[in-house]
Image 1: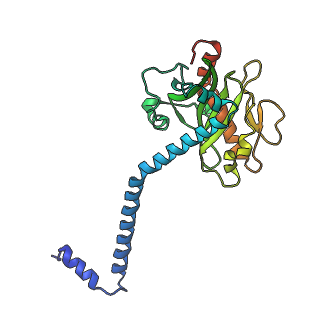
Image 2: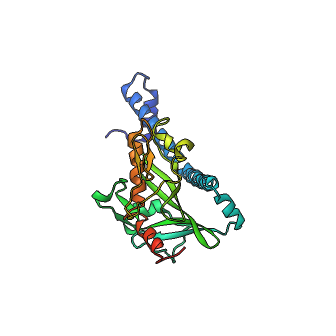
Length: 270
């Protein structure tokens, strides 16, 4: 029977000439294995840091957006910070959720779990999400006890990536105050311009629905000619369409639509 002693086999391999095909193959496999282990260990080790950095970036974008909205910075500071609250909303019913902590709720994880999410019908899935979480956090800003601003987390497919951002709506619930994206992988200099201040400044004042309550907001090619329209990015039609679709989705039936309708009717208050 052939000698199966691993140490002797290893010594025999090392003694083989460097031109040996077997020696070359074994060394290549070992290098690949070591590299794979190093990459895996590094990815696992750095994941908490990456998640912390992403959370910090998300918080920074949120604070930047709120600080840049007219009057919001004074509103928050004047109330000692007490005018800003986070509420978890049941997207199906539009009801605030009382028995869950919005500070610890992970919307992405919930969307990936069939037990805490729902499948979106294909004809309604304009944001190309496939599934969405049953719940979502909403940031409410009040002035003198009245709702002044709602900040909604939104996401959906762009041209090359998923786009994650915040949509701010004024207290009339029909006027967009701001739209900002804190995470995406769109083409630099083209689709990535969705995060440029110049394009973000086109959103404030855009109306969401018409007098009959029909959802009208959209990103259009060329100039915006209606109060519901925002001019798209030149050369980035698919990214612009993705933004238009995700905004319309999250303001619609399978997004925050039921919640917003209940707020407008006075059935619920924040």
